[in-house]
Image 1: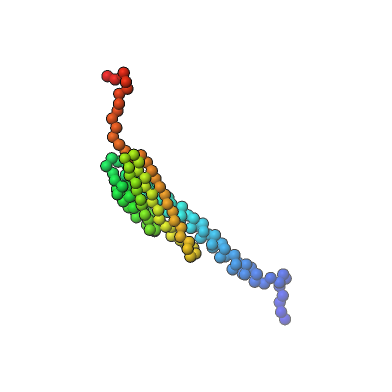
Image 2: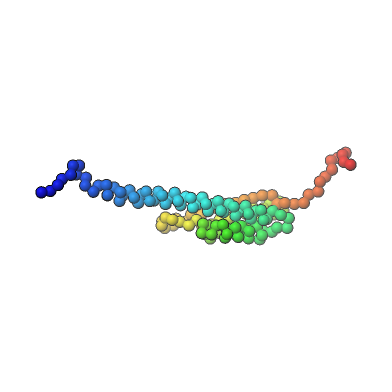
Length: 138
């Protein structure tokens, strides 16, 4: 004697979950990958700002600004920002630092290299002498 269950869909839930699980896993990993990109971009932006801060004082050079940004990515971005590169431009009036790198990937998709780049810019510090207004003064 055979037992027949009503509905005739024996085992369909298992098949449905087997199909749905990879899609759900892909969505979760995509969200985590987005978070990794956001964090790596934030580290690159902070490294660029650190480089600008180091390049602003009188006497600071392009080398100091770029090296400070690279040092920041090594300390704060270890494992988050791979192959970091820092480029700096210091002129008499401005300092600009650009930090770029690659974000580690969680999804094993060939050719999916996620890059990020952040820049910061500020005025160069300089000494000034106050001027007296015409007709006024002690």
